[in-house]
Image (cartoon, rainbow, N blue to C red):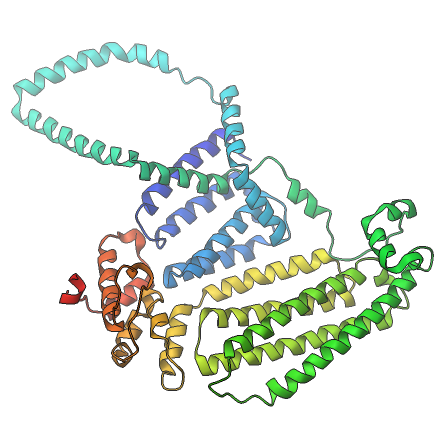
Length: 526
């Protein structure tokens, strides 16, 4: 690892770069410059990170999110870019295998940033940077500078060309310092502090390796352990089991008794969920017919809520019974079968909720929460698969968290590759004759959807009532959809004029090429 002095130089350079390229700009092409600086800096500070096996996959995921940010420039792509950048940096700085422990180290870096900063400054003051001999240099330069100053004045008075050049240089310096001191308004200083914090959390590693060491003690495979009976009786888990099982939780038969309780519990839970699944198969899979009086919102949300409760309960129950030596109990066959049945029935429940969401989309159109349900179902399916693997191959709870954490990262990166606002608008407008079109919702989507809306003038001109208080137009009451669209279009072009090349992104370029710059009409000046 390099010296604290070098880290301070990189920190201040990154802070100034952040301030220059992000001040009053969109997060767009400028992230390419900042990202290159951060990655080059951390790889230079920690060169051994190139050998880490997870690094190439993390860098690949990060490059994908960088491309999607510049192409789509959505909030999701910015979130995915930030998350993968943090993971790349933390995996460079620490030894991690899990996303969750890495996230904890990233939070630690930011929470302890001030202490890391002061510690590096303290080490520099201790003598890492030796005296540069500034006093000695000043003593040698003072007499030459005085002589040069006298002749400079003589030449400026005697030579008009030289005087004009000096005046031009003076005017240029005056303009430079005028712009330089613009940095010292309160907003710019605050933004500079933000840049220092963001850059410092990325470049300065906290001194403690607590989360890395904690994860190092975790393993993917379960091992059979012999309990110390004295310590076991003092544990909270023993107290919990004794509360419900009494003397059956103690002694040499405790493992067999716990297996029996687990079998009874899973049989009862399977019977309960079988009844619920039978109702869903009959009425959702094969018996559903849409009528206008059906409340599809409640129809979907009820199923999702039940699914969440069921999965949480399933995870708790299965992790409780398969937490330790019961995994190695020779007569746990029926407990395993009960667990597999519980997992399979939860998979059926996932399909039921998927069908509910499909009906919702087919009859009401796409929206954020309906897409969110689909993403949640993918996470649930992955969770069920990993729980099955955990039981079948005797894995630890750490394995579950690690694998599902990485799957969440993959899902985030994949989701960032889609411009969801454009997808929503495109789908809903394509089905405008079969679904109730929410024009107010469409007008609240990002600027990338403006060309789609302009090509559907019948939607903007439809008698759908007045749009009241939509976002930044809250102060304008009674705007029609057409008027609101024209204001958004006008504001888009006005904002684009305030940005430099640093804010370039493919999405805005697409909108500018598809839309003609609006002409101000009377209602826009009201």
